[in-house]
Length: 149
Length: 177
Image (cartoon, rainbow over all chains, first blue to last red; front, side, top):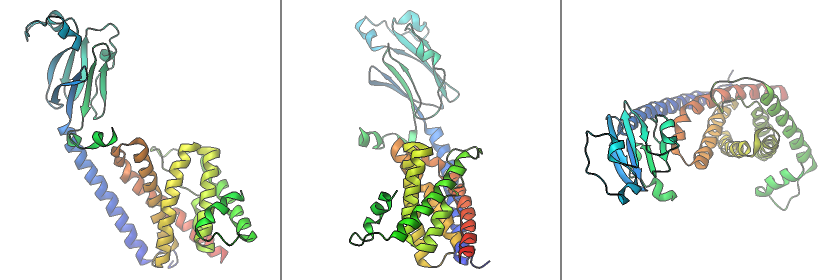
């Protein structure tokens, strides 16, 4: 049996198992934190429109950039979005997921896209130049994109 | 086939031509390893997570390392990975496997040099390093470090596969002695 397993093998085995367990524990913990810090980033026409925590429920009406060419009506929170704007999307954050529930465009791709909840996922509406994406809170401001782009 | 060992031997000494026995030996072992790769590829078993497999072909690599030395092990491993990549796994699979093979071979050669570990221990470390090398390539290709969530799974599967391969190799080496 001595030629199969030596003392150093057992030490190495224990070390590897401990590293594996530590890594899985660390990943589980960091994953939990990342989930609570995740942000919903709404971009309209390539510019940042708003940024909200994924954990807070809210409904946002995002007017499309081409709306600005038309005389924008004064914002009335009670009125229906479709009454206020000609070009718009309605973004709903609810229970940790984001979806686009209404859009002024014809194809309704963003509405049919359904809800997204994981960091890195996004919903795009091309006619209104809207991008809704979920960003991991911990990665925000990290030089990740600035290095690759 | 005779081209590949010539290429891999570039580091060990360019002046000396490769001996006929080296070429024949490596050719035989590479063929054997390739057959193992093939047999493993056609066995239908699905452990549920992609990327986990036993790697029986590595028995040949380990035996080559212990019986004939690092040069043979490297030659056999590279030939086997390139051919298995072309035949079964595709070019991207080959890239992953080459990275895994490079890292695990380096680790095996170093651990064997320390003289502290048995064949099983060296093979176990190689299994883990193999998976780690593949993960690094995957992270580089996908450009997303989140793939390291996969690390613990590959770690434990590498330990298990490495131990099994190591025991098999030890048995083969004992029979060859």
